[in-house]
Every structure is written in C-alpha cells, then in structure tokens.
Picture 1: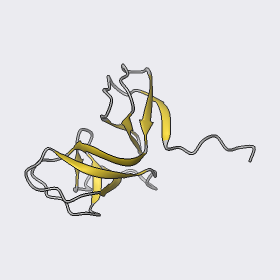
Picture 2 (picture 1 turned 45 degrees about the vertical axis):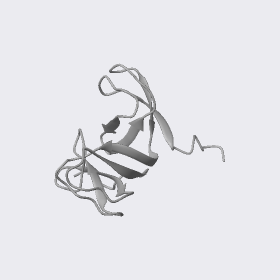
Picture 3 (picture 1 turned 90 degrees about the horizontal axis):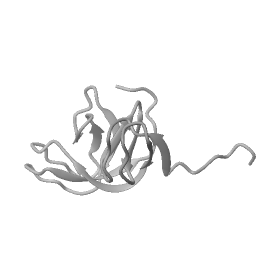
Length: 112
C-alpha cells in the first residue's frame, strides 16, 4: 500500500518537557511511555501499546480491566478531565504508588 507509514506501536514526537525513560507522555489525545530520555523539544520515541508499570493515584484500588485514565502525572480511575489510556492489567491495592496498565494504543474520539 503506497500510503502506509508505520504500525504506530512506537512514535517519534517532540518531548513536551524534559522526559526520562519510562515516564508517561501525553500530547493532546495521544499517550505513550517514553522509550528513552529527552530534553524538552527533542525527538522522543513513545510506545503506545504494551503493559507498563506506571505511577498511579495511591489511594485507589484497581481491578483487572478497570478503565485507566491519565491526569497529566499519574494514572487514575477517574474520567473527569482525564485522558483514557487503557485498562488495569492486574489487581492493584490501596495504597500503592504504581499499577500495571495495558495501553490501548488508540486515540479517543474526543478529549475529555
């Protein structure tokens, strides 16, 4: 197919801020996990699919399959004003600082 570019599991984007490998990166309605370090504005590869251990709102308990949203700095089960990024991939108790998230690799129809 002449117009195919790539599968999209990993995308190169401008780093929205100084970023460390493994950090969550949100750009509009696009979300991924940084594959390496980058300074703000530098090219940064983000992975948009897969299962990652990410920071979460510590006071929340997650069940497998719960919708997970990004609030700009941590994962949450609260949809209000947050970006849907995937689903909980494991049971996560309260309190805990991290949780396993299966990234959905898709862009929602609209931002919240």
